[in-house]
Length: 605
Image 1 (cartoon, rainbow, N blue to C red):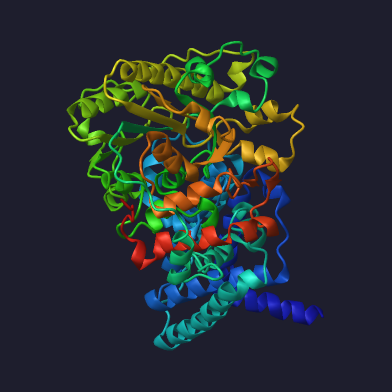
Image 2: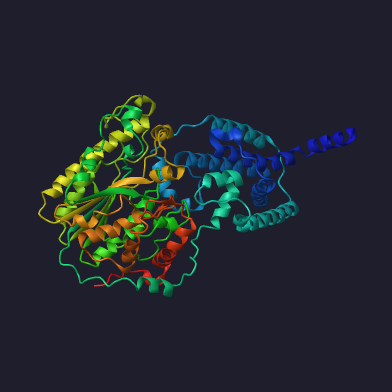
């Protein structure tokens, strides 16, 4: 036994350079996993025997194939370990900021992500500092390791072995979803259990939306053909302004702000006052996003498509709007409207510059169209300045006017104190919740700005409808939400639905049939908002929007966060009752999104 150990020691010393190379993939693997656990690194989920070796296969394969191509083991170690370390760091911040690892479909939104992250202030945690220090030490040793270039024979051998490893890894990735734990909605859990790289690759296999059971273009047409034919072209065409206000939410729906935080001031008194206003519909809107993912909420509102039928973490606006598609804009254009979109930030965000024309918008106003010397609120154009531009467009329009306006004022982050913004909201222990303090102060500004805009349209002689809603809840301190929910007797499922709920209102400066909407559910999902707007305006709905709107009575909320029926009962999306009830919706939506025959609006006159 002693002789065997001595021989092993001698062999390791003789081949220490090769041993160091083969330990580097293992080291990279461990660091990536530590970083994705963050401050929970001491509680790393024990990998199964299978997932451990499957992940390691990938790391070894990549190291060996790069070594075979370059012929330089030292360069391979330095280059690849640096890349994997950067991937681990980016993935850590992705989980920390939006509670999701980096997913394959996030690559569609890389430009938007960099734009958003450039405005964030990052806190580097201790475990990340340790990982960086260990990596630097490791790479210094790698640089000092004198490893000769590989011969052609060894390079070919390395290439062959890496090909075998990658083939095995690919096969596991293809069939892994049937064997290992996967979840499109709990990606953090899945990523930690399977290992980040393996889970990422398994997600590639579910990147594309599968055809729903029973789907065919004929089946979709048969379902929609049951819709009544719309009336003739309406004579009255009110102007329509839809405002998706960045991160506008009502914290008071979660709990008692006065009791928990001593906040006696209502930060949105005007929006709350509309609950008793004439010619106004108010309620709660369930959106697919939380803390980010703005484009998914606007996609639902514009198209009537439900995000519940897509993969969690995907971005339909980026991924699936590849040709002319039906939207609120295209439906209104069919009825004589001009269609303008506005977003006072970069037009490339979420691919809007590509998607908006395909959804029927004639014009897209971006940051570049605002005055260069405009005064910002924090880093962004304020709601007031945004609405001033809206007014100019409204006054210059000749046709019935439609605008879809995505504001920017309240965008995260909230962790920097600004000279150009006074935080006017204060509450007990607000020093412990600086993000919430700044956020609530911004909401107060938004409430005041929308009040001024409504007053402007109140004075207008042209009939006009203003639709206002938030895109998602705010990314602020988790402890703030915990405090609000601490006295709640709601279930986890109900709280999850609340976290995806924001206020909305539809206001008109002329008399609308309020009695018709007196029985409207208090809470609806965003996929109904476009159809509801058309109905309030007395305009024609496309066959698809008619079908979607008809579901609202029975299923007022359809969301991956939960589905609510007409009796107020909450179901999970995969409940058999929900699956059966929404089977036809899945079919017509799939045709609406991917079917060649549905590339243009089919509004009937």
